[in-house]
Image 1 (cartoon, helix red, strand yellow):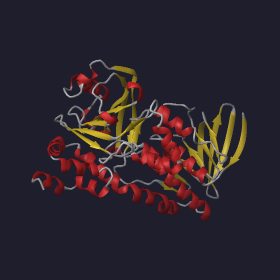
Image 2 (spheres, one colour):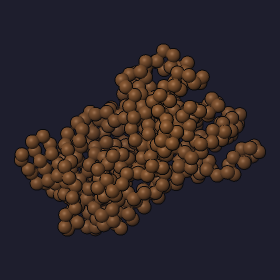
Image 3 (tube, one colour):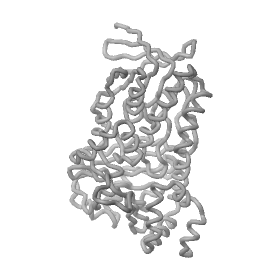
Image 4 (cartoon, rainbow, N blue to C red):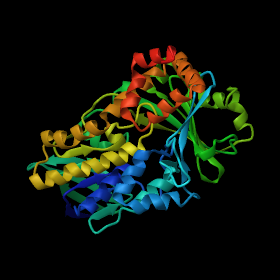
Length: 419
């Protein structure tokens, strides 16, 4: 077997959204790097397939034309203008992302199969500064003297020994970089499991491609979703905390199919629907509590950093956003020749939690409220009758100070007394 020695300023493990964003922004800063990906693109990734406004924000910062390209291609990307919450009692609350939308308003979010979206990002990565290796196997990650990381990989009959002062883990919920440096997985209390299925022929989808979150009694404290996709397809799934599955001995697949078949609010919509391919599951490392995101010579991004929104389960936007922020830290690290734990905490961890911390904390609180179905029923019932309350909740999607009210008892007292 042939062995080749390589050196680079940055090694990225994983070429999903977090790794792709890191690579793209490193290239914008003209910083050479090597990307190591075990799969070969295009490849599927089990996911809910919903992309928030944060996804659009990062893509526009990378290249404003990319979002125009996405929104112009409705054969592969479905623009979405809002969300429907359905309380356990079946009452629905429709929340537009942009309440004062005009015909010229661009969709703030979209849905797209990860097979398509990840390949879209992957095709944007090539540059003179990016060396991309697909279909590789990481054999070892070692720390050498002089604050250097050495990664040994195999690609067919070729072996590479790659050294760098910085390694970035963008390799998902089973991250080998996280395992190497933090030596643990996420806490059981911060871990959830999701199931994804693709259906054709689901009826009564909403105008403007609103995504749907159903807090069905059958799946609480988790939720059931229906996300519209191009060509008459929908992504259907369920997400629930791992400890709940374990404590209640839940067969999540059976529970999901039972809800589709028997729940009075959704079963009629699946009467003539056809399941495509098999139902697949994946792990969801939720950002329920602050955790280390970096250390000496390493940075974690996306799912490897446990940055999935605890309430919505959406991780793509935070993966892209963390990759973008990682590049700011890496740029400073190279300039100051400092790859220490203290440096990365100050320039990456603290920045991520400053930008996303309040949002994640509120979402963690809302996730805990899923244990109280009467509370969801109460809020939706009131909003159903009150246009002003409905507008307030709508504004919460863009105003973090307003969203914070959802986690305070005073908010519910005001609703109770119609104040």
